[in-house]
Image: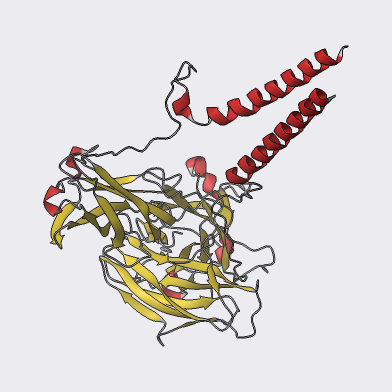
Length: 331
Length: 182
């Protein structure tokens, strides 16, 4: 290759180098090229004056304040009203805030969202504008019902309001803690039996009792079943008695299943394996009971069975009045 | 021979209903520090029943770190009440170590009334327990924001490019100058 050709090649390489170096540099100035990548001839920078007329500013919502102590407890088998308030501020004046626009909801993962939101539910009522705060703000007061089976834990509070120009403000930062409440209701508090004869077997009580979970504690898992403490029945006077171990209780009671102690998943015999024969009390789990915290299906019916009336009983009344009430225990 | 053992009973239709609220439970333990003294309330409720209740309270567990603030073991829970407090105090030993924990709790037992002439009276009880845990020291961590390291800013890059271009120009000029002189 001749020297002149080498010189041309070197020159071209240098030229290409400049082009490839320069193009990315000028590309960083969009004004040099239009959208078709054509050179516009405009300077890469230019000073300009801009004037924007702002028609309206969105309001803002400050802190959400609980108007009751945190943490909150449910009301047994009813609703607890959660009370809170929030301040809406608009730099264009409190008069520009829509007094009827305050809405809110409370939510938690896995739980039904509770609301006071007239945008979605017209009958909710909405949060109330209760008073002005300075010249720019309005205080909204809000209430939302918490249902008795709403789960314990931390709940989020979301609130919103708008101004008269339909600019919305939101605040989703507030929380509150819902306590765990263990509640049960027993519809009748006595089991009764018809006349019993000595040595009689498998006598079913004349009453079922219905246990209802009226709180927000799921009584369903291991260690969360109902337990019972049963004590020996004794007469007002005398030495004969009916030990607790002579009873059983079942959650299934058709065909006297409550007396069938082989049904170990639904029938509980009130005896401890270590009990000696004779006088005995019992404390233990009632197998098969499940009481979820929910609106329906939160009940359990229980039937009591006298498996065997001791043959030495004398004619009198044997009752818990002389020995102590039996107790159904919720954990 | 027929024995009048349990019968004779016109069933009582009393609804035995009660409940206990607690700010701490299995999944929401009480976190403390060594030497802390914490007070809180259990809340007793009687909203569904049809009569006033009496509730007997007793400590569960053997930890010894929780006690009743009030010196009584039986509380009245009027019908339609939902917030009857039982004041509790937890005293954490001063020599407790991080990670130490205790199981504490209270048994609430309704005291049945009007049991006269009733064979098997059923009451209700509630066991409300939770763990007290000496918390580990919290380490402040900045988990927000982006961790970035600027290797070279744009001004530096521009300067380096400028130097390279100048060097190339100098060497090119020299090259052609030498060639011309030859």
